[in-house]
Length: 175
Image (cartoon, rainbow, N blue to C red):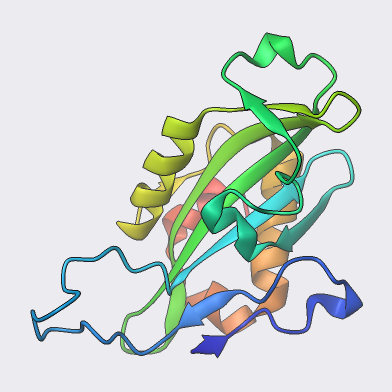
């Protein structure tokens, strides 16, 4: 598996960013075919207040550093002092010339560490994860500052992957 986000610039947050891996079910139709493959997906968190982005692979199983120890509620108004985050599902594919950001979908969540409560819509997170795997770009609900943080993060990490990505993604992030 090739890992694009290995360095994390000295931070101990999360793991690397999955980019490409060999797919054992590629075309053979045997055991394991039809299984959801998350090898090319990475969860990127945007800390809205701090204006920073980081990868945390624990989010694939709702066990990220942001989510640990938090009971998530379905009503946003029950977490009025929640710190805002965006969880962005980023899927990378290879179109022959090299990898590119194929699917990028953002989901809102808030966390109030003091009361150990948070808000997120689990159906939205699951559906957006699926949409990212299918190559959709869903970032229009993000605030402009967070879009800029995400664009800078994706571009600065690997300029070539960013350059090969679609205009839809770049325009969506106003980059």
